[in-house]
Length: 310
Length: 310
Image (cartoon, rainbow over all chains, first blue to last red; front, side, top):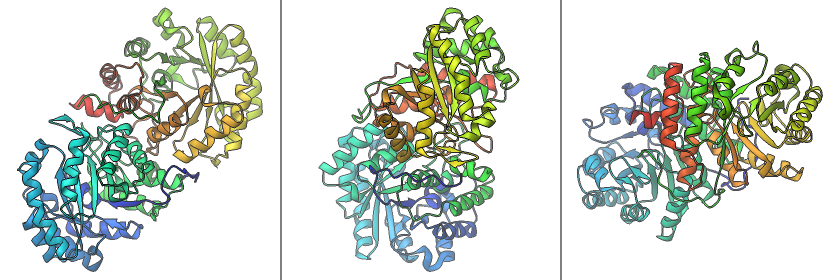
């Protein structure tokens, strides 16, 4: 069987928009540095598979993320198809925004934290200071007509602080969204969350004025929970899901697998349940198998493994 | 974080009984043949981890499953703790039952098929003939006071026949259960099922007189769906779940991963959601890491990978 049997699951939304993070969150966490031409071809192929929203690259300081130091080159190679409101790029600060605007992008994503420790480690400043840093970024992006997405990391647990209280996540998310962002992406960066936690956090965000239709979910499979948690969020009314083609972003052969939810495994679940994604699964598997070849290792996606072998 | 944060999921049952299949379904599908002493120690350690139901071995013809040819030796080493109603052994026919009875077991499991092709390939006879073959097995086992579990394979898809119609599964399951079995285990042997399919099949079985409290679910992670499907079944009232310690039974480094749901990944999900299992997760991870060492490769369980690395 190369496609799932369709048996509708009425507890799920009729359609899901996948926010494809492979070219950005995926490749930035891979050890192999991929040539700009391959990155551009990857985005082009993902779009041809029917993925509508693709995060293309990052304008983070190249010394932090050398894998994506060629953001301008990739966007140059992509031309118009790499721009527009459904081709966001990651932007860490005003300097990054300057580069993104010069490259003519139509959407950006900023990344905040739910914990003080991760804000210090990842952004080099306090939670409060990071919100203030993003204030002019969001204002200028909105002024330029860009769509703005806000990532919040460590929403379910933090490697330094342990469990993260729900009210703390609601506070961090609300402050970022109040800057004027269009969409919130809730990140389980270390993959420790479970379904009851998903329900409780989404209910608390809704009560605080952030309903599920403004939220995307972003699960990592470190503890094998990514798809189960995603399905739990969909039952609560979320309909935007972050996923990474081929599960890029964490090698399963490393001691600690930290990969994103694989887009193919998500698509299998959704198509089987009668949920529309617009994605051509066979073409996507072929694309991920091609990228795995470029990275010199098998894809960690179970669907890619099963279908590429058959 | 070495244990999940507890946030109750009220859509799940308060407690789940895990039917641990690692020593049987796990080891029979591993390439490395494990010494009898290691198998016995494995069962002993799993029991010490709090697993109450452990399928210990198989009395299938040794030429079919050479990995488990030492069933008598393993049970001999285990003594009384390898017997009783919560230590089932797999039995394929009356010859196997004779061996199981001679070894003094307290429970057996028989294995049927939802498809004609798999019955022919796995049992060497038609579906109808296989039911007749099991009739005296179940009758004699019941007469001897043994608990009897019925596995049905290929309930969601079949590699030769493709999609398996729900009424066909209901028919196969009903015929086996009508022989006098105590519990049905619904097997997604090739791992293709999705959540809507789970809901529809459980509803159809309930309507046919097989309610969720007589059913266990047995998912394989070939397409990454095992945990999501398990959680779907639990929301429908199922409270018995088959899982394999460390994900034994399918090497993720092979081209086609066919492993069972890893017990640790299930326990992480359940404990996080406030569902009792009685399992000591840290001890179980240690046990699976030990067994992975005996097999000479890392465990495919994400939780074992994450915790063994930390």
